[in-house]
Length: 368
Image (tube, rainbow, N blue to C red):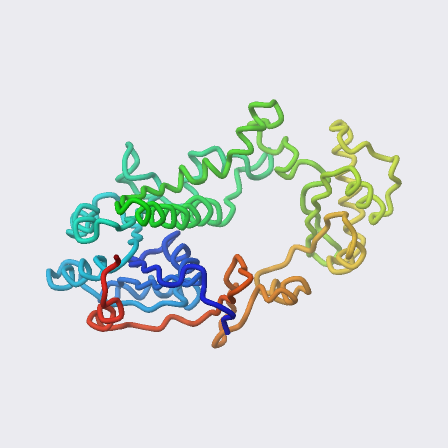
């Protein structure tokens, strides 16, 4: 139940069905109260998109099924866009134009529209027409190069960094910024969201550290890339792992206390001693199971946490107390974030297909 209206209640978004960042971005918008309608392809070929998005990424909204190559369906979509605040699409550059639904057409139908385009490479540049995935986009930013052990290939961070950090989050920011500007000026615009550029922005700290001589482009040689003994993961006796993040000296001291290692044995930032320190920590953590170590460090500032699997995450006391996850119709959902003082974000499964006439009727009045 909601204690008040959601922050984005009344904002209307037309989402063109996609994989990658678009469904997550629109899930977040719908969680926060946007009225989102997915425009999905009418065919069995669309099933794969539903399988990937499932009841989680497609929650809190319904969809209309259309054939975008059909003139009548296309006209109906333009009419729907004419009553929206924003559009979000994730096709390759030029696809919307070839369908007759490019920014010029949509902004002509709705001059205050925020037309958000999400791609890996951006709308221009030599790579713009080519395919890619998260791993390719982050490869060009320097971020992927920095991840992993020094003598091993870089390790992809799932698709959290490019698709979702550099893509979905910047799509949400871009959409809301353009809507706010349109409401102030009366003029809509196109927003070009490129995952490469979003990832580059997210990497700002490391560029700042490089400029100050505090970061090396050599993988596995920096403070927070897993090479420091006090900022990495360790195996435990049961095959589980703990994550250690004892960066500050006072936290490092508490880490040593918990491991039963004398505080004067190691100077934290003596890099010559890091191999010996790592070996000592590895040997210590292998003496107990993961959850036993979690108990040892519980309530301390040693910054030691059990590494949980997705299936375990909902059972941790912190996530359970905060209600970070909830099961809806047999499916576990991460609950909406962030939290607002006067509203509670509920989760509902996708509401299914709607007739276009019904969708248009729900948005009977164009935006002022």
